[in-house]
Structures are given as C-alpha cells and as structure tokens.
Image 1 (cartoon, rainbow, N blue to C red):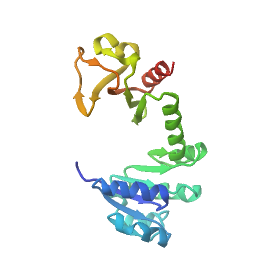
Image 2: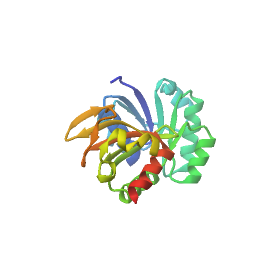
Image 3: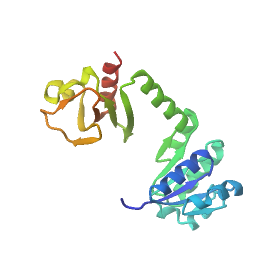
Length: 219
C-alpha cells in the first residue's frame, strides 16, 4: 500500500480518531490545532503536530498544505472556524479538502465555500445504524463516490441458489464481486456459483440499486 500524506485541522474527538487511525494504517499524518493540550494528547500517535491557527492561510501555506493528498478540516463545534479553515486550505493550494459538517445547513455552506467533500459523522452513523436495524442481514455498507456503493449481506433463504438463477443484476442492478464462506473468499464468482445460507455476499451497484435490494430484503 502506497503511503499517503494527510493534514488534519482540529484535534478533537473526530480529528484525533481520524488522524491516529490513518497513522496506524501506515500513512503520514500532520495534525494542527490551537489548543496545546489537544495537540500534546496526540503528538506521539501521529507523524507531526503543530500548535498553530488552522484558519490562517499563510500558516497553512508554510506547512506545505498543497503537498498533502487531502486536508481534513475536523472542526465541528465552531462553524465560523470550520468555514475559515476550509477557505484557507483551498486558498493555500490544497488539492482536496474534506470538511466536517454538524448539520445540513453547515454542509451546504461548506460546500459553497469550496469543500471538495463534506462529511457528517453523527448523521451518517445514524443513517447507517438505522439501515442495519431495518435490514439485519446487511452486515456492512459504504458509499463508493457520489452515486454508487458497496454492500455486504449475510445470505438468507431469499438470496440462496445459483447466481444465474438469482439474476441479481437484472432484478436489482447489483453485481456480486465476492463471496465469503467461512473465511474462504471467492472473488468474482461464476454464474454457476451457488450461494448458501450464511454466506457473506459483497455486491456493488448504484445507490438506487442498493436501495431496491434493501427494500426487497426488508420485506
């Protein structure tokens, strides 16, 4: 896996969790925050830290903001600071800025001021949990860009049988890319592959296709 470089602005709970996880996954991570205590708490768990103002364009420029694969603005409790940091990062040359928004309004504003992507952790986790509760057979799901996603489903009777008979691409518009059976992974299974109860099926499709599949499994 190629090492990538990330800058995280804000060392709160979200920023710290994001930064330390990226570092544990083998990437270079720089974390900045005005709060000295917050920075000290994380300094031994990432590559570099700096006690600076993340809303200052010149400071971000000096830190080489434009050299990072992505700059994540993890300031969630102060919308003004979040907006200023997002604008400063883009103005300093950041090629990709991901900003944390705590509300729909905040997400719209951050999008307007130049954020390449806006995440709403609490909202997204709530939606994810609700979908899992509504469809217990769905083990995990995540977005793949704006219009597509990947979903992992534990097969029950409705999804058992040969793939050629289940006709998942025709019925729902999803493609099976892998099947996990007791730890044995079958990549790109053939049409004659037979899905058994308890298999974990990994599928890819458009958001609409995955929604159709969810609704079918929820019945």
